[in-house]
Length: 452
Image (cartoon, rainbow, N blue to C red; front, side, top):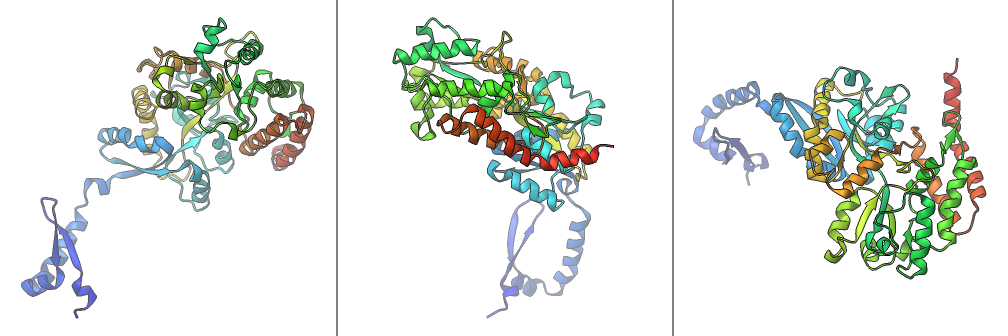
C-alpha cells in the first residue's frame, strides 16, 4: 500500500483554463528529477503573476432577503465600470441578520457595507459602528437629499449626522375591495377615518363580508400611525420617557379599540389561514399592509378578482390627506471598520443612481428610494404604486433610539390585550409608561452624563 500522500491527485490548470488531474507518483516516475527543478519555478511564476481579480480591491457587502438574490445583477455593472474593484455579496436571512451583525461588531469583522433596516440604524449608531455619511453627501454630485422622500431620509439622521442612504422604501396603507366599496357609492376609499368607519358598519350590516376590517394584532404600525396622526410623539423629554397616557395617544387607542368593540374585526390570527383566499371570499374588505403585497395580491388572487381590489393612502383624522403613516424600508450603511471607504462609497453612489434604483425595482419589486427612479419606470402610471408614492410624501419615522424595537413590541403586546377586553386604553397607557420608563432608564443616565 502506497502512503496516502503519494496516492493523492494534484490538479494543475493549463493555459486553456482546463483542469487536468495527474497522479503525483506517476509524474515522479516519468519525469524523475526534472519535476523538482520545474515545479518550484512554476509555483514562483504563479505567485508573481496574480490574476486581475486577485489583485482587485474587494468590497464586502452584506444583504438580506430577496435583495441579496438580485444585488449581484447590479454590482456586475459596477465592476465593469471599475475594473480594479470587486464586490463580494454575503446573503443573510432576515431572521439571523441582527445577531450576526452584533457578533461581527463584537469581533471587529463587520463588512464594508450592509443593508440595514431603518429601525436598526440607531442601535448601531449608539455602538459607534457606523461611518457618518454627511461629508460624503456634501462632496458628491450623485446623491441629493431633495431626491428622496423626506420622512424616509430622516430615518437615517441621528442627531446632526447622517448614517445611511435609503435604498428601498416601505410604508403602510389601505388595501380594499373596490367592488364592495362601489356598491355603497365609493369610487375610492374615504379620506377620513370616521367616514371609513361608517362605511365599514354599512358593509358588515349588509352582510357583504363576515368582517369589514382585518386589523391583525401581531404588529404595531397601524396603532402607531393612528397615534402619529393624532399628534403623538410616543415618547417625551428627548425620547427618555413614555408618553402613552397623553391625550394624543389615548385618542388613537380608543379609536383602534372602537373597531373591535363594534365587532368589525376578527380577534386572533387563527381566524384566517389564508389571507388572499379570505379577501377573495368576502371574509373582510379592508386591510392595512405594505408594498410587498402588491405582487402577492396579483399572484395569489384569482383572475376574476384582479379588477376588484385597489389600494389607497391612509385616511386622516384631520383635513390633511393622506394621513401620516410609518416610514420604513432599508438603507445602505458603511461600517467604521471598513478599510475600503472610498471604494465602498463609490458603490453606494452607483446603487443610488436613478437608473440603478429603477433596475433594482424591476428585479426585486422593492419601491425605489430615489424619487427620480419613479419617473424611469411605469410606477406613476400604475394607480396602485402611485398611491404608495402619495403616501410616502406623508410618512414619519418612529423614535430614532436603539430601544425602539423593544418599545414597539410592548406596544403591540398591550394593544392586543386591550383588544381582547382585558385592559382599558387608560390602563394600557399607564402600563406602557411604567414598563418603557424602566426600559429607558439607561438612556436617561447617559443623557444626564452628556449634560455639562
